[in-house]
Length: 325
Image (cartoon, one colour):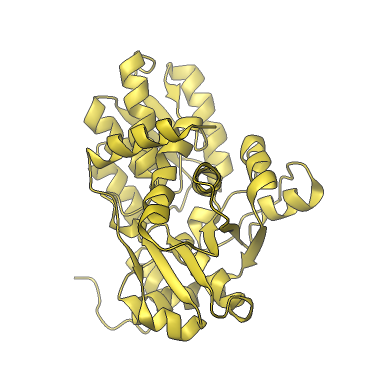
């Protein structure tokens, strides 16, 4: 894991590209929860999600060390791919991104707009990841994983910004995809000597890490059928699991209906749009609000990249009035 000096260096690299993101204690959320709620707005990054922080660190290293001269390839449901395409364009590394069939239309469009070559393959993220690894071997591309030390220290900068700017937090709720966000938050908490509980959040429809913690070893699940696509992971990373095992207070699972309600609440209480994974931490806090009364709580709004069609059909039950031109 990274040191405080390495975290500071990563923060400098990130801030050379964009000036971090804000954190606010929203009054309406405080009234609703009965606690002081600090939201870390990773929906404000240049790609609309926290992942870009890790991509900037990882691809800068690859370019500096000449380890991916033929380009990189990876798999994603969207935010990791946007991160790599954004960072690759900055350092001159072409990016090929494999997404599962039926992936987010708007995230696909965003990756293409950032210069990525997009390939659709497989029924879910894990199938797309296996195909990307196969293509890396066949085409001589560097496979950029979704969990890597560079990614962890890069995305940890959001937690570092939050911990430095907000008053001491009793707990911080963090969504879990493959695990870079929560692992970075755990390490940052420990480096700063804070007592903040780190609480992981997974979809109840894709609880690979929750089941793995219970079992004491990585557990692959049969499906990850959640509308919160950033949480749709079937196969946990063993290294990420070990970090969580040592540093997470617990993992809370939330249903798609609870996530949809959290997206609606973000809009009504803060007028910010959250994607499914981005709203999951708030969904978990709402589920546990009876136990946090009077405390100071942080939640990671990890991204805002939700398709209009998904927002209309899932979150507003088709009642969204404005229609696309």
